[in-house]
Length: 388
Ligand code: SF4
Image (cartoon, protein in one colour):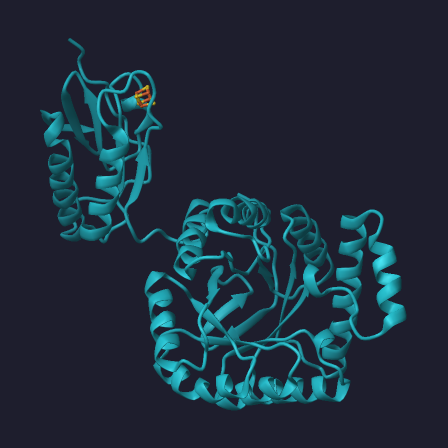
């Protein structure tokens, strides 16, 4: 496995980012922060789903005014997302938020940026600084804007990445001048290839911890592919200390998919059952899709251990495909054959497969809890059942 890139570490209300800490999973609330009860309910829901950190937008004074109550009720550290108004940053810091997201380029006056940095320094609050494709081109100075747009008119991706790096360099000089190093860096784009190349370049240039994300990725159906392509590639290369998958949908989906990505890459220990299922083919002997849906729902409701469960549609490839599962079922000739860690346990009618499988899952989970069995990550040698 690729070694994770060594980075500095920052502390976000007790959640460490960088320096070898587990990759932190974050998301953002989608409702108004000033609607305190709804905001707290959303944060709690996201924390239950597995979020390590939750970010809230604070565009207005009434949002920062809501922060003390939100912070008191939140089960996870809170990040304040600030754009344009340095006063919002100061108010959020005063309220006790655990991290600020702030791009110096969005704030007009350098003195104002310095005041925010000084306030964060006093309270050891990290700041995430980013170069975002959507806001990378200078807005205020007309000549600079024209020059940057002209640069991007050819070799867009290459010049965009150069511009992102130049802007980050300029931002970081401000932080250096203030001797402030509790910084997390990010480079976001809607294009996963730009996210990969820009973040890789940043990782080679700095040792600050990195926040990974694809911006404005779209609904889960398409955004999932964009996000996993970029984040999966970077994480597999050892790059990235905190991630946010962003969807135009309930943020719970961001956490579910982020968790699965981290588990798949061995960067987070699985805490829930893992379901392996065959894709089905012309040899199928059971209504597999329905069975898998039912098994998945029941496992989520009933089993709290990361047991590996396999559901296979026939005995031809089933045994080989589910080696390594703790509990497995194959359909064959109107029957379901159930194995627990490689040992055949039951042969049942097809219509009994769901109940019998769940029974064996419960039994196995109880045994693990009593210390009478161990979860298997090692391959289990499943013997193909007799045919005929
Ligand atoms: S387990 Fe059987 S039904 Fe499922 S994909 Fe493999 S061969 Fe096809």
